[in-house]
Image 1 (cartoon, rainbow, N blue to C red):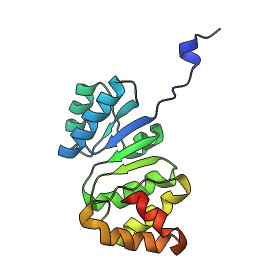
Image 2 (tube, rainbow, N blue to C red):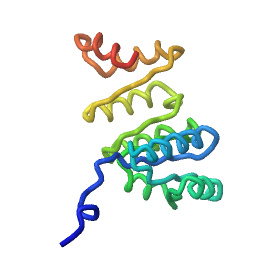
Image 3 (cartoon, rainbow, N blue to C red):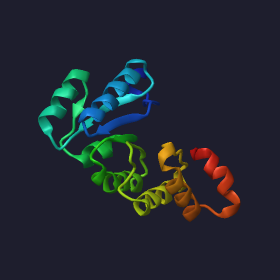
Length: 159
């Protein structure tokens, strides 16, 4: 007979952070606080700079993953806190694996890439937070992806 603890599957979202630079450190700190409050299961971090990632992982007692792919495979949700030029490819890879994603702003380098990410996420329910200074490009993205009759409610969900 197995114990209840070992046989029970965690109902908490397994979260990870891609990027441990200045903003990444804040995502790590906040996920660690959420994990301490038993709101999420914070599984680890990845950064191309392995030593700072390892130190941060040690500080918060999580794993420093050796690759993006391993962290994505282990997580249910990821924060992408890397240079903007990497956001599109990383977020696309996460979304096609049906994972939840939080992308630090700016979302991508351009509206075409952002529209593609929005389109990839639509089948899985999406919440978009758009900075007030980016509202005009956000309205264009919504108009590209959502039928006109539904745009009013779609725009209110991302404003």
